[in-house]
Length: 282
Image 1: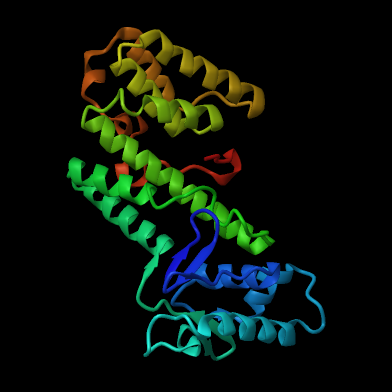
Image 2: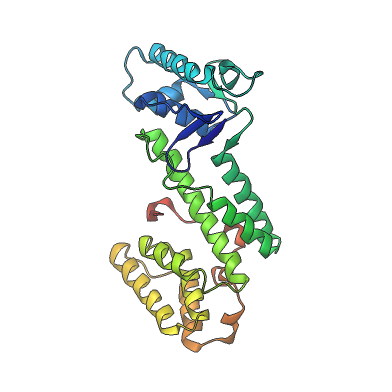
């Protein structure tokens, strides 16, 4: 079975599409897949489908949706040993989705991202870059783009989007260390335009511009970020951005070989942590 949620939801069993078409079963399955291999309580599933306004028949209707999902899984599961109830199993007061043989893009993304981050922390830059690029290639667009998101699902998707941005940061950091400053310029330009208040990306963009011989453009980025922050947040840029801008003004020789986290003053493993209030766009 092949499951895809990093983009439009799509479920394939032995090559046969079995993705639910009805809205609420699709929401129910999405929540189960986000917690694959873990029990999701009936109460949480009901919240994930009806938010804070469930009908009086919510528990009975939930069981009906589970039966419908199992019916879709019943025939083309692709494994004689795996039945629909083995895959979508009842656990105490909830349900759990157990992945049979196959591919699940979210699990693959998390594994590659975790391995890539560890390689970056250990200084294995080539391996880190490869793993992190592979992790990002798992994405085919906005997660669950063909699912109407309840409040609970929206929170899950938001956390996943923030994880994706952190992975992008680690990937760009690895590429900058490997001398790929010109190669990352296009992606950084787009990401920084979409996230003008996301300071870590702006910092990496300034470093990449400077190393590409675009010193004036790097300083312009700082002034644009400062203008946005003062106007929208009433704040000055962080000390990290100010230090980097001062180094660019001096044409500091160290800029040719230091890494972005030198200015941030943090371990690269936590590079990219920002408050959700700033907003992240991909």
